[in-house]
Length: 404
Image (cartoon, rainbow, N blue to C red; front, side, top):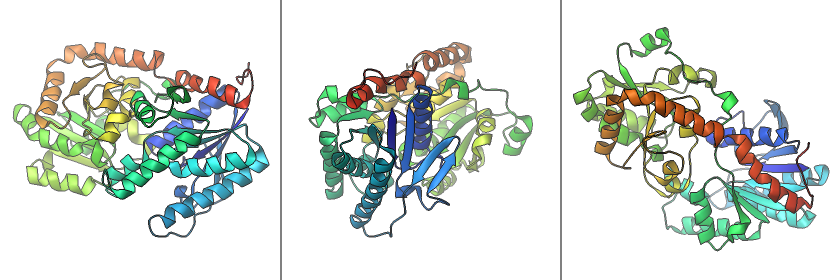
């Protein structure tokens, strides 16, 4: 069985998107399937048309000349379609598997129809909702409605749809797509890739100025939807009761400048450590400096519908966290058992959740154990990827596509 995956971008770029992709591909290969991988022009300029990264071979698309909105997307789709058809004719895959956004699904649909190859579309988030968070459009705008219509058009024409969580599945059903045509491939973790958290590196702690402090932290990209502004708003109240608290923010992104300005305005800049982006190989050393993680996502369509990876990764490492009660978090977290939820958008509720966790450290060992058990038994990639089997089998017309 050969599956040709069509992707927005891939490793060596680092993002939740690329990590999920790599995990899926490796687990599919562990089942004995052959996977082929094409990335869109959004990968950017690459050194070669074919690149091998971490044991996976990626075919790259040429990057077309940039154009105005609308024309640019059309050029991206044409470039993807041409490269995809070339690969499909050469490699003769059994299934074309397009991943978000719809700019990959439409070329797959066109090529699949021409060559008689089944097409599936996996939605990780809706393109229009991501655009709202990036500030390139507004919910309900003409562009938003046009993009939403494109997504729905594609969903009606593919042979099957996959998505990452129940929130997105419900939204797809509400668009008139039969529920039998949709399968959830839940976000998960590779347990073997995560070790339980260790003791903090003393020298790094000294360099960061965290000696003798209790540390609240976040590791990741600083997007607006992550709600780090809410975390800063809550921090003065926390400091009043716990002067030894420090906030460690590891990473960077679009909101970094705004967050630093906010810290100055709140008079807490000297209590916050912005590390900037750190090498992936070093991330665990920074995680080990954090006593309690915070995931204060704002409530919006993107966060209500989509489940993130970060809480699962935290559970895999036996780490403790507080998280806002958006739908994507509630689908993953058992409040008070594997993590602590608080009312989204409320800095007082966030401060209260952090304070409650710090006041009841005797509960931490049980929470760590419950989180680790959840990812070991439920949210692991072997379980998630098993959900592809019946769909691929039906579309490829084979009784079984899992090698013994």
